[in-house]
Structures are given as C-alpha cells and as structure tokens.
Image 1 (tube, rainbow, N blue to C red):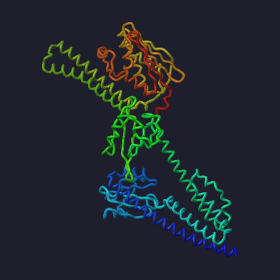
Image 2 (image 1 turned 120 degrees about the vertical axis):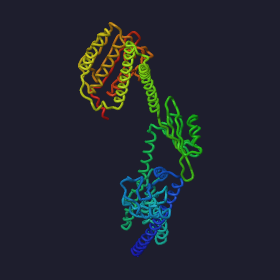
Image 3 (image 1 turned 90 degrees about the vertical axis):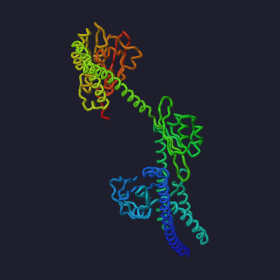
Image 4 (image 1 turned 30 degrees about the vertical axis):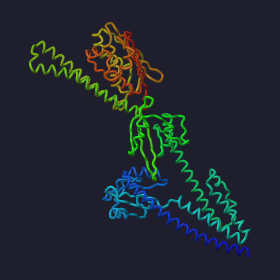
Length: 572
C-alpha cells in the first residue's frame, strides 16, 4: 500500500510539476517578451524626444540599465551609421530588415529574429529618427529575469506539495520535504552566500529527485556566478574612479554628494565622508566650482577652468536625467601643463615676430633709402650695404635656429642614433673654433677620457660647439675655455667651463629660455639669436640627459651635462 501510494504520488507530482513548469515558463516568457518590447519602445521614445546622438543614447542606456541594450542608427538607404556592439562599417545594408521597413513607412516597427551579425536572438524595436531609423535591441535569453520568476513559482509549488503530502502522510511528507527545504536554503544568496554550503549528498535520498537537484545545482551555480561578476564589476568601477588622475563628483538633484573619488577629495576636502550623504556645500565652498554648478540651471552641461593650489583644472559639469530624476556629474582634469604650453607658444610667437621685425625693418628702411637715391655716396652705400648684409645674416641665422629647434622638438633625431665618442667630438669642436679663439685671444683646452654613448652625432657636435662658442664670445682677452670629458659609472659627463664675464644669479635661471639674452647689445654684435642655449637644453632632453649651470658675475661659467650610455627607453 505504501509503495502504491508512493508511486501514485510520484506520478501525480511529476505530471503536475511538468505541466506547472511548462505553464510557468510560458507565462514568464510571454511576460518577459512583452516587457522587453515595452521597455525598448519606452527607451526609444525617450531617446528620440531627448534629441541625443546615437552615441549619447548608447552611453545613457549603458549607465542606467543592468543589462545590455544594443543601439543601432540606420540611414534611410539602409546603411548602418552607428552600432555600439559591432563595427558599423563592416555591417551589411539593413534596408530589408522588417522593423526598419516598418519604421520608415509608419514611424515605428518591431520584430524578433536571429541576428546575423552577433548570432543571437534579439527583440528589435525601431523608430524614425533624424532622417533615418534608430533601432534598439535586447537579447531574448536574459536568464536572470526568467530564473527569478521560475524560482518564485517553484517555491509556491513546493508549498502546495507540502500541504498535499502532509494530508496523505506525515511520514512521507517529512521524508520528501526535508531535502527540498535544504534545497531552498541553498538558494538563499544572503549572508555572504552561506546557503551554497548546504550538503548535497543527503538531498538525494530519492532517485526521482536527482534531475531536480541537478537542475537546481546548475541554477545555483549560475546565480552565484552572476553575483560574483556583479561584485567584480563594482570593484572594478571603484578601482578605476579611485585611481584616476581626474577628479569626479556625483550629485543628485538636491546637490547631495552621492560619490566622490580620491582626487576630488584631495582637491577640496580630504576629511569629507561621502557615505554621510551630505550636500555639496558641506563638501566645498569653493566659489569657482559653485559658479560653474550654478550655471547648469537651464543648461545641460557647462565647462570652465578653475585654479587650485597653482594648478589649473578644467571642469566638465553635466546634468543627467533618468526616470524623471536628474543628477549632476562633475569631472575635473588637470590642464596646468596644457595652459603653460599654450602660454609658451604665444610667447614664442610674439618673440619670433619681434625678432624678425627688427632686422626686416632695418633692411626695408635702408633699401628704401637706396631706391630713392638718398644714399648715393660710395662710402655710404658700402656702410649701409654692410648693415643690410649683417642684418640679413642675423635674420637667416634666426630662421635656421627656429627650424633647428622645431626639428629637435619633433623627435626626428632619435632615428639617427649611433655610437659617439664624446672626447673626439670635443676635440673636433675645439679645432673648428681655434681660429675664432685666436682672434679673441682665448685659449681652448680639451681634456678627459674617451666616453662612448649612443646618441645623435650631429646633435652632440652642435651642442658642444654651441657651448664652447658661447664661452669664447662672452670671454675676455687672455681668458680660457675648457672642455672635460669623464666616463662615470652610469653616465658620461661633459663639463664646459670658462673664466669669462659670467652670468648673474637672476639671469642664470632664464638663460635657457628662448630668445633670452643676458647682454643684448653683445649678442647682436656677435650675431646671437637668443636660441643657442634653448637648443642645447632640448638636445640634452632628447638624449634623456641632465643639465646644470654654475656661474657668477666676473667668475666665469661652468655647464655640466650628464648623458646615459645606452638610452634604451627612447623607443618606448
């Protein structure tokens, strides 16, 4: 009798569960399908009304959905112009897609089919948008929603079975429900997932329950995998925001601080605790930031530059809206170097214009005087012609130095690196300058040891030649110029020294600036352009070297250069 009742109950429960599961799956699938199309339709209408670009629509949906929505923009001829999951240029023409044709004809359309591009079944909803078609799509196999619905119905079914089996037999009920209760506990993902530690062996006392528990194990493993993935995504987001160089502040519509990363905390309020959900006024009273935030009223985004601790920060403030609620995202990027570079560029342009204007004005003036016959005497023509020649030579030298400086900054020298002996380079430069040194009654000394480095030979020669030439120019009769080469343990050292007029402490900090001259009258008399030491500085930087200057008025000048032997990181 007991076996007959058990067999009858088993058959009844099995048939009931199959029918019930089929019905539940069908209902869940129907609800999910209708919900998917409804959500796609709502999202599409909101996106169209917001007048956002397809890229902005994609970013907005990815920020506010726990699942992936595919966004595609199709032109009226069927050409795919944008797709957030595939390369639009490689996608075929979509003019024959059912939902696209419906949208072009009636304003909207929908369909459900296997995507030829991604090999997944999608629910599509398309609307006419900006002369083409905006299409949103979701995959049909969102197991999270279906699993959640199935679990609820299974729990309900278990409850019904408890009542039925209790009426028939308390003993059978206890023996059957005991493993089922343990199964339910295993599906409890709370308390750090402790339900997953429930023993499996005791739950398989009945052969008929083995398939059910096998399915439960699979669903449980999938649930825990999803939970772990979500935790990793959250940790990844926190890791990125906390370690990004840019500052980030998230506010709600009441300007309550929802989140703030480490950079923003260090900028405004290191002791602020974002978990307290305080307002922006509690976080900072910086008038620059508040001014930009207040400008958001009536605007979707604003940008500006604020200054904090001698650093310039470009601020991007944007309003975001979802489900009738809006918040504010503030990003701060350090643009100090960019602004300094722009200022240097403007100063360089102004200096170049000034330096070119002076010789050109002289040449133009004397040329005009010669043309009109004002200068006619032979000695005047020779004198003023000489002035025109010297100014032309200085102008050409200036242009050549500017071109040279541009070539160095473009990094073209790195491709021409070869083995260079610094001692031989110094001796060669001394030989070139010997005649000039004799005319100036200055002695040239070269000493040291052979030091082989990987470098641009032309740059090294020009660098040493430039420094030694300056030492001769800014020297006095009976003076000396020395070049000493030393092979240190990790770097080669070049020391160019003289006992000339020297440089004041104030000028010493600026001699490597473009167009800066310590003695302008002497520089022009000797043809100086004010770019020589700036070129030297850039050449040292190209070789990853170090440059140091020691000088004093009337005490001479000593310039020390350290250059690495290999320069292995130049190709990186």
